[in-house]
Length: 379
Image (cartoon, rainbow, N blue to C red; front, side, top):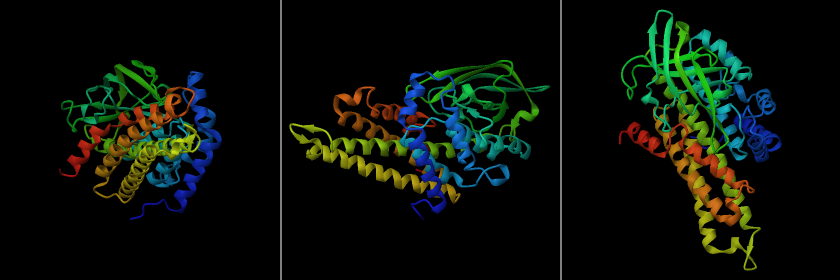
């Protein structure tokens, strides 16, 4: 088992690093936030990312992709996490693209995957119905009617939902909320009658939306996959998005940790560099060792997913849980170790803390994933 990227993946990762450093540094996030940009991300930067091939990294060549795999995309997400890059890569490619790839028929794949890869269409998954991640807790109803299905219910935390050209709606066609059976997936036009989309702005400056469905009629061919059997492909797609999000978080905690160590080398107190204080050296060493543990766990999960090992879902949950835990540790330490300036908006380090807090709960927090890891591992 290799705990490193192969040559092609390294080259892709290097391209992502150069692009992020040159085009989407943390200052770009500040500009989007301070201008209250209606789009929530830079169309120009997204077009450049698509041109470089990031939109098609995980898709097979038959659907306009480059077939670099999830490991290749995760390497890119790590680099974008270092600069807090805002883009639809997680929502439209990693999650929505994976779901269409897992559940869609050939016509649906041919229609949507090339469009996603080329950045022509943005797609968002409407899953969550509360602030806590619960894929089995879907209650939004999809009632069978003569013309297809009628959807009623509400969704929250829909990533990039306010700019989506298509919503992948997770609904319940049978059984009760909390059960895996009875979950179905639907392709829904966000401009359809009865759909109301409201953008929500949270502290991490990532884009989310609340979506309400009131007697929304969709045709039979809007069904993605088999009726009542949507949980399995949804879970697989969520795992792709979870490990990509974990990789992005890993990039963020590396950057926050390294910036803090650099600060130790510059800041003087009582006439000496604070990096010479043994107590602070211990805290820096603790951060470093935890970051290295995260790297090993992340690569182990990516290797398992790439090899389609049976234990891949458990390892992905383990990685998301551990990296979320360390993201809290490192972001807290980074702010505290910068002293008073660490809590001001003037310093970038606070932006890493804000991104970490929302990323911790997105697609499942530590508790959700430690419980899932234990269940999947038979504990």
